Amino acid sequence: LLSLDDMVLTGQSRLYEAAKYGTCAMEIKSGYGLDTDTELRLLEAAQVLSKKSEISIFPTWLGAHDFPHGKDRAQYIDELLNDQLPKVADQGIAKWCDVFCEEGWYDIGETESIVNHAKEFGLESRLHVDEFVDSDGLALAAQLGSVSADHVAKSNSDSRQKASDAGTMQTFLPGTPYVLGNPLNLPFEECIENNWAFSLATDFNPNCRILSLPLVANICCTRMGLDPLAALIASTINPATTLGDKTITGRISEGVSANLNILWSANVDGWCQTPGESPFTQSIISGNIV
Figure (cartoon, rainbow, N blue to C red):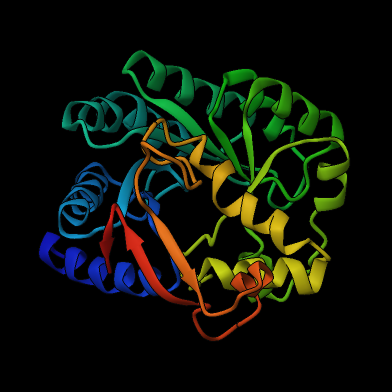
């Protein structure tokens, strides 16, 4: 197991790489410990990184990412509810809880129970849903008032409408099917036609080691026909609405954080047209050149 110092060193190198590609704010999820001590240490590392980096860090507790070896479902869910969650809340670092609501992982009832318990401790939710099959996870996220629902590749149209009505942001993670060699067929056109807001994210994790949001947008534009300006909105203004931070808005305006990326090109479409290298000549985060 990595020590806190090792986690921070690893995190710093990744934040540096993300900053090269224009990232100004980032959600960091736990979920790779699957025991109380490691989950707390992952969140502590996120807090230390937030103090060492110009990038704004938003930590999420994802203890319900999988089930650890050696414990059955009931045992681990009991640990989540009665050990991890109280200690995470007491630690005071995580801003949200998350659950991997998917067939083979956490079902609808388990997800609802964890989210509702988290609300009692003051934690709102983001959810992993409908990555592989439509299990009505997005509809559940809307019902629970989650600020966002990640993956949502297989969600049905009724669920997407419910999410839009509830203010739950659909967040597509196209980098994962791309690196896994799976079909790229996300419903961008349907979302735009129905005025359903959506976001894009990198989903950096062990099976998708992408830290470049412009690369993710390039995949969407070149492989799925998304307009570059729509991709820009989905990478800036839309995700900013889920952060609960009025200074980070994803737009340039008076009185908000001076997060700016200066393009190499005079054409705004150039922001996602240079896969393999950064499209930015300079990035400014909170008014500081990084």
